Length: 75
Image (cartoon, rainbow, N blue to C red; front, side, top):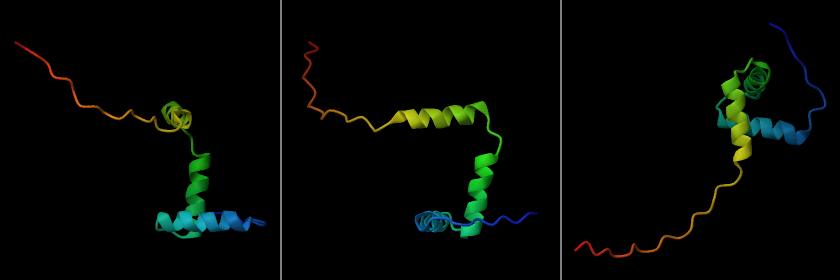
């Protein structure tokens, strides 16, 4: 297995990686490996399509406030 050294990583990037690693209960090194693996792994058409659809989704729509239902006369 190869060793990879990264230099000149911005401090904010390092802190974000540390937070992300903590959320996933792994070390920063393991998190960086997972990110690199995901970035270069072969992807299927469906995975690409789902990612694109998620990007296009935008903000959630605001639903109008509900009013009381009208009464119906069924006689």
